[in-house]
Length: 174
Image (tube, rainbow, N blue to C red):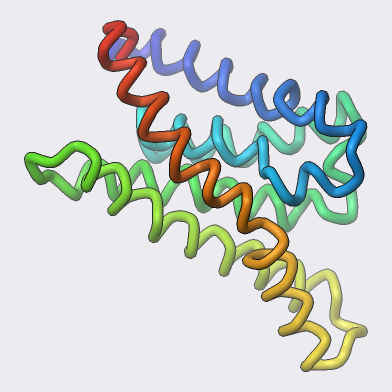
């Protein structure tokens, strides 16, 4: 893939981070349940590579916050850390994991990246931005917001991302 194509795909993924959540704003908490910003960042890491995925994870939420007001500035640092970790980890793993089964490669890159991103985002949110809460409240908050509330979004990602990559490969975009 040429450098220019990498730049264009990364810019598209960053833009999608701002555009995809817009229709969901009509529904309370839909963004934190469906996780629309996560999909372009994970795709960027898997398709373009770890550094571009990291960049998309940092700049996507920032662009969305500055242009649409979501995510809120109070949540922005944790979301940037989480998404940047997604892009970096899945981009690194897809380069390292080389089996003959393409779907295994994708899932073996996606799942650890999703866990790592949630751990990093949760750490930033709980230990840096919510220090006034008690220990049990912090852990309960992290588990509920990063795993239980977002479960539908996680399922959507695990279904859509391999399908999108397959479609892009069949159409020779990647």
